[in-house]
Length: 102
Image 1 (cartoon, helix red, strand yellow):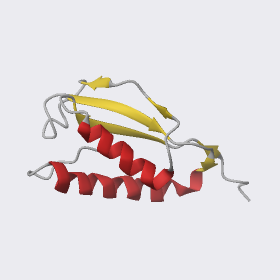
Image 2: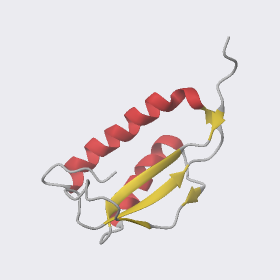
Image 3: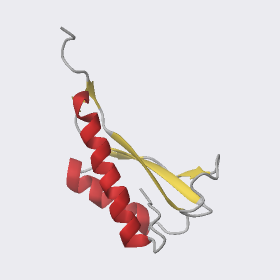
Image 4: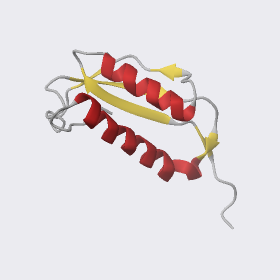
């Protein structure tokens, strides 16, 4: 019918308060528990084009994490559920006001 699912590289963007790298380290550790050791982590990029996430922190940084291997794209929904769960966990761990850092 539609042919085989395409193979893709899984990439996850992580927003975290610029003043404290511990938030990124926590997210990286949790993502690697789920999908395996990352094979590429971007340089930090200031996230300053919008104030939409100001409630997390007035100064945010974003890094991208790339996980190893090409995988079938059909798992996208499950990947989103997994990252959403990490967002919820981060609210409970790091923020008394329940703001996520992932």
